[in-house]
Length: 158
Image 1 (cartoon, rainbow, N blue to C red):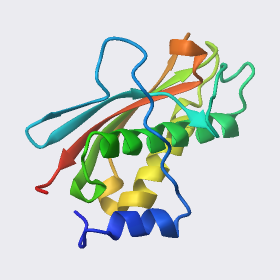
Image 2 (image 1 turned 180 degrees about the vertical axis):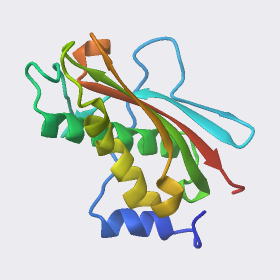
Image 3 (image 1 turned 180 degrees about the horizontal axis):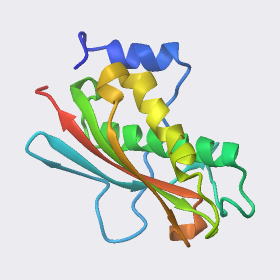
Image 4 (image 1 turned 45 degrees about the vertical axis):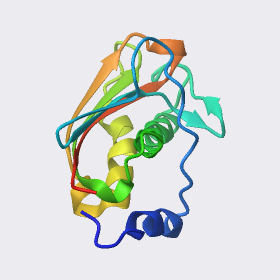
């Protein structure tokens, strides 16, 4: 957990990271549910400069673009926590990320794509950002998104 109330905000500033506006749900669900000290963040889609990253890896989306999309999903996870009134300094541990990659049947670099979100969590939360993970390929995602990432996050008191 963070040492001071502003440490995660300070780290974001040092990293040159500005969180996006939290996206509204596209169906009948809520973006964040807190049960006990665990926050479950619904799957987040990748918005870069306000535009949804669409397409399929192995077809019309390059690996590097997929990694950037996964990072954007990670940023949206943080934005959803903040929008839900959860201070990022309450994050004790990123427990698990689930990465879904819209890809062709022969695309096998899902773990490399998911690294975009995983590396972001380590940059922001250091050791507390290391997590378990699933990275799977799917034939399609909502709104033709290239990537979707969800999260399970342990929270401390705050």
